[in-house]
Length: 314
Image 1 (cartoon, rainbow, N blue to C red):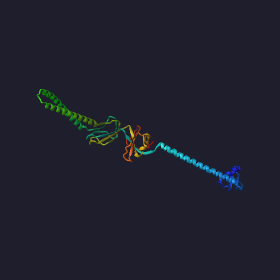
Image 2: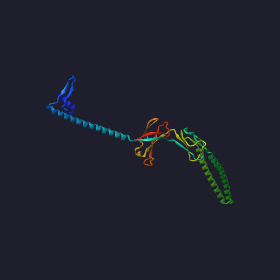
Image 3: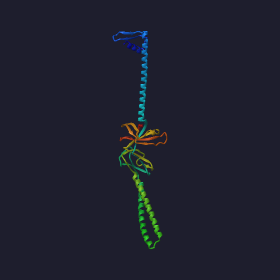
Image 4: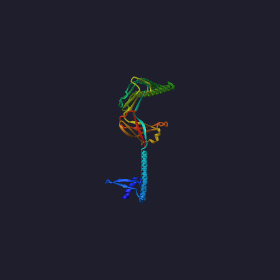
């Protein structure tokens, strides 16, 4: 018991065994430890040195233990980062996969055009161009076709009569050859006019533009009764369904992106983490971008809407 008190005194005084220490007992009386005699000094110094040695060993062991924990945690974190891949911050926009741009094939007036923002069902009219000039050209060709066919029929009858007379040696062979040449030219002109008429009919049919799918008019560059030159973009129409998210990514990340990568973003419809559906590596320069497409769920996405996204590479 006495040795235990001495050991505690030495530990509390950090080896200062030559000072006085007063300890209050539970009974309330004080115990005063006087300086030790020279007889017990060596033993007490032995206890002090042994305690300090154990203390040093314990501190070294704790230091190695915590260093090992830190290194293990760093390794696990690095392994998780390697498994999860890098995170690429990007800006994306919503694009429509169903799109129709109406281009004027011939100059003329606009008879009717849908308003911007109008929702048009499949088969309904989007735009109607003035086809009066095309109809007039088609009428002229049809009249000429009727005349050529009548002339062809007359020359065919004339050729039969000429051939009968030629057998009786009443008409020379050159006259028969001339009639054959005339018939060939008439047949060729009839075929050419038939092709022109077919092209005009298709062109007239395209003057009345109908919606190929359900959608909305997002842009219009013309008004009703306005004259437009040919090859002018008059109207842009997009579908309501099957919208995608187009992500612009710097070309330096192309080796890190594959079809196992995911695109994460937050929108007004909630949080999403979607798979990449297409990678378009249109790399022209080192600092150019590549395009990544993500198929969006069927919701009321707005065409051209900007969304901040993250690409999680694998």
